[in-house]
Length: 146
Image 1 (cartoon, rainbow, N blue to C red):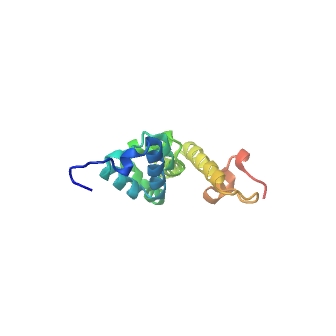
Image 2 (image 1 turned 135 degrees about the vertical axis):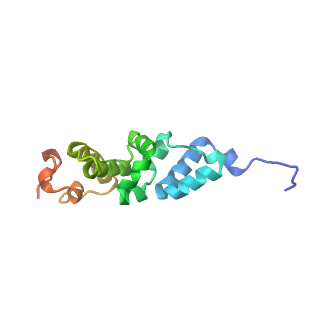
Image 3 (image 1 turned 45 degrees about the vertical axis):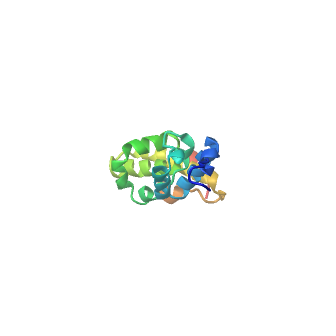
């Protein structure tokens, strides 16, 4: 290819919907890879205001240590608005341990567990919420018979 003959790159010719799907898959695998892709390529610069990306973005470091979410309030708001399951889990853990708000904790953990149950093949004998919550505080509507 001659230096004076410029052509469009492959990313420039792809439709935005396909680029959004690619970035959402990258973000679902790793938040670090998502940040690197967004920072290095102008055509892949889709932010968290995009619901597809915000819903699927993996925030595994925050899931492992929810106290780190204190510095990411705006990001957490965007993820919660898009119904990101990891964000609901982190919010539930923070509400319980840092703000002593048991009702809001149950709400967010309930949303996260229902989403995870839809992603996984739920067993009739195992309730995913019961892994996180003692049986006595699980709402009766969510309980499954032993």
